[in-house]
Image (cartoon, rainbow, N blue to C red):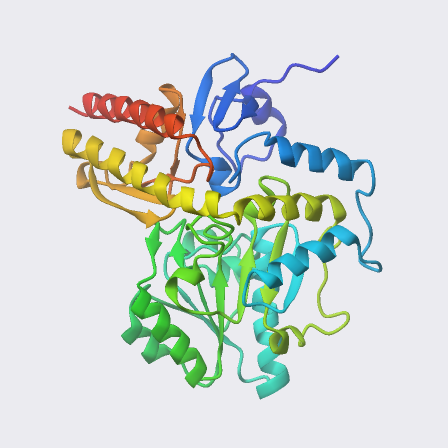
Length: 405
């Protein structure tokens, strides 16, 4: 018999680094989720931009079952068919020639930053080791990735962290010009800052960053852990910026919730990861790669990618309608189905109040920092779920405003 657990169990047995809500979901189908009490929720959060094809997608369930009956895991002293097929699809559909598999966005970014430094070491010597990133960026929770990330709160208490990292204001090309030099080995950026407040890169800025990297023989690293795999309306967001990076990282939606991540790169860059320089025990395991291959097959269809743009417009229309009535958002922004609504000054620092109220109304949303409500639903969320979810959001907004009179 399965032991009954509750939210109180978390406080008894789990590390206190998370503060989960009282809700414990037990079942999901499409863009609907049910908790222990049987209450239904519409999911505008997507597990933080992860479940891009919703919950319990039948194709993915079948692929997982089939692969589970064949091979779960192999050490990387051997390769496997799902990994090779997935790598071929990633290279065929992107700028990249080579793929490194791992398990999470943080691991993919850790690998990317190590590769950037190793490439510079191989081609220019040890002095070319400096990395430039952007304030408010987020790249993971390892010591290296929190150092490259532009939010000091994630480093506090863990110093000394890796050195040789400088930060610049996002979309400020003049500041970047003042910082970049021939000692710079890489510039690291998100095409749309996620945790930093859903801030898209300006197209002109993105192109100028590429030009500066070329001038200083620095690599351009794109973190598309959150923006990639269809979320922007193209397979990866870099396609919309007219810029090609040298290295790109992907995770989250790549496995629709099954842990898998990838770092992809051009061949001449990838060659710096020679035998023994980096590895991952579970990276490229057959289960993860079989599922990720099926995810890509579905998401890269014209119907899904074109549908993302249509759903984006529905969200914008609905959020604007709420705002016209309640005047609670100062800005609505984003790409595809990674969107943010920045709250007005009255609620600055308290966007989470809307998350809490939304859950009470049967809706999952996210925050991106203290001032932005974030939406990252399934890319195939039914239009009726968008409309119903927005109706629930409107009720939540009204509730927050009433409580703050």
